[in-house]
Length: 221
Ligand SMILES: *Cc1c(COP(=O)(O)O)cnc(C)c1O
Image (cartoon, rainbow, N blue to C red; front, side, top):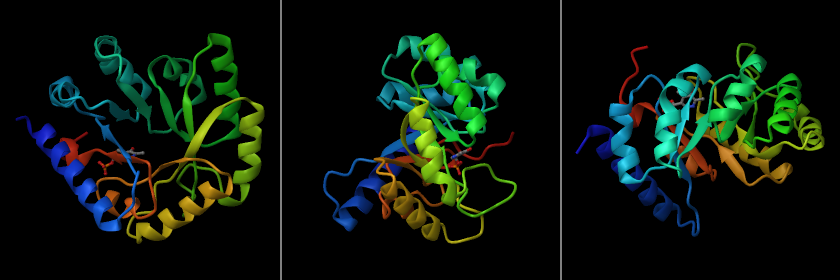
């Protein structure tokens, strides 16, 4: 068995055990296999096994890797996780099914325009800057309700919120905040939890775990 597949199987088992331990019924969070910098050789074993959710953080890299794979496997869903520049929106809509990083009005306006021009659909998470970090993207928690309203006016398909907690701090604090914000605007999906903290994210009902390193190994690029 290829190591990416045995890694994924182990992760799925850990998630199942954790959910049993928490005794939450009818809870089926999805694992997004974050394949940025990795090639088809490492991705194929997962597709053949039946895994459907994959994530990338660059439009150009996704355009090189995914069109053929998606053509051959119509159940595949591709998630854009990284910062999206407005000049790449058109290309992003062609290849991605989900965007996890809606972080500004300018981007929201552009997506709305392109979506309606090309009748493309994309499901969207609003990225929240919970740590108040200047260098990180995202909507401020206090601006969320108004931003969300604006997105609805633009007819964007907003399904949830997303966060990347600051490094070297307890992620649980941020997961709790995000799940409360998500409830406040009544959204059903939450994108949080990565290699180092995906089991913690389950305690706060994350519905999309974004896992790269634990599946594919260390990235060298
Ligand atoms: C790369 C990336 C991940 C995956 O991170 P790992 O720590 O390797 O699991 C998750 N989310 C985003 C936004 C990323 O860019």
